[in-house]
Length: 317
Image 1: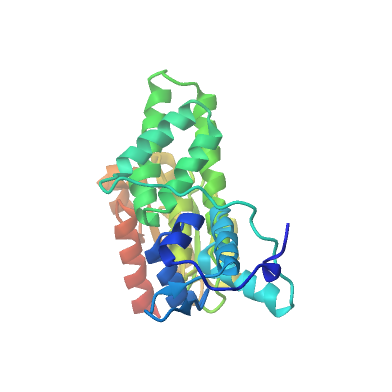
Image 2 (image 1 turned 60 degrees about the vertical axis):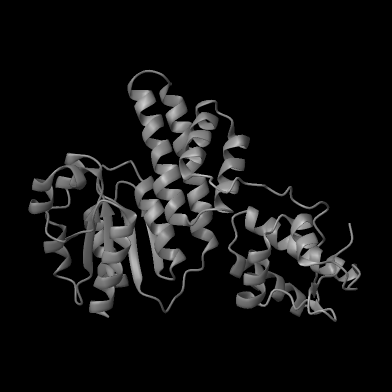
């Protein structure tokens, strides 16, 4: 397979043709050119963009990296790093199949498709559904309206005996892998506000915290995701050494939520003391737990959590 530098650079394709060949919508192509300077297409006499076979190969390569979970900015940086050293990647052999979506497509349709695929242990169909959803919806919509309803439906199916626990574990593991890939695709900026995100002691349901960590990192925060069942004594010692601006923990059960009652008191001994935010189903469902837990309740949705975190860090900063 030829590398990209060996492919002809003669401009001849319109943006519509390139969109068909690559599976990348024209609006996305224009955005990549404007924001990331991916390409500088030739302009014909009538001012239409014209692309070469090399341009198409570059776009296919970038699309392939994005499909692997890499962000467009990281994929572009990766390509530039290689070309500066005069190293060129091999061209992707075939163009990705273009997905033609109905205009009124709804997230619930993807949630249902994803649920069916995971209940059938059809990992390939589930992965294709997720990839398609990422090409249409933003992260918050995917997390709130596709993944979360899917997890609820699968949890209820297990509770009522319609599926085995192995299926529930399969689905959770599938999402955990996808989310960790997304988290690692976003750069961790050393000079950004520093946050620790994870789960309360005894808490094993980590996907909500992991989704929040992905969202925060996608916005440019420096986020360390610490996972489930975090021992508070170790967490406080680590925070005293690393000095995060904020610690965010979740709890879905009452016992896990009760473990957080004294965390704020321990954190106040650190100078400067980090902010402490919490959330999760246990706090959403029981007002008394919120009243008993010093710190900041971040609300019952990703949108409210993100808004609160942004405001808190802005005031503290």
